Image (cartoon, rainbow over all chains, first blue to last red; front, side):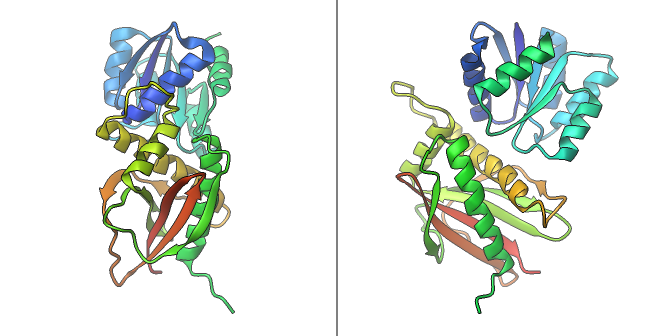
Length: 120
Length: 159
């Protein structure tokens, strides 16, 4: 499986990768991008099976990134991993085509359940 | 009668949010215990700060600690294990920024019943103390997260 992690925080990308390994995705190929703009390029270049994306990022944030993907007709599996998960954000995410929104703090179980459901 | 200022109210909320984050994100089972109020941070402190803004409130919240405790908190977030390479300064700053980011998200939930529409800024790492101007209130609360000593900061514009 190919997983693209999009987060402006290097620390958070490291945490997401570590949590993915704990969730049973240690064999996955993981690539990284630091904002939505880079994420768009990475999706075109790598064709990941799923994108795990932060919401609040400079240059192009997560929801703008997702909307840009869908506007281009790209239906890659997409989930948010964010610091906050308000009802409004969950609604926006769902309407834009996200499979899930996991808010921090999260567990390996949160990852395995949501990713498995999204890619099945 | 004791009057609670808005700054104190947010500070109380930040302690509650920190307790939740300590237990769930940092695996500190003792959570966060309030030790007392401090007049200001010492110059040796480093802290991560983030803006919370709505039509009603404009503030910065932060968490600060000495260098060693900053590393311990960052390491807790990063799930560092014995034998892992030491965090570089930039990753440490990044991780500390994530802690305040998670704190802000949690604080937003804690205060959501009274303050809706809060927007989070991006975290910044700052060394030294914070100086409020005449239009700002500053609340610094010393807390213990297990054996780690830290300071929670709320700097808000007076209404």
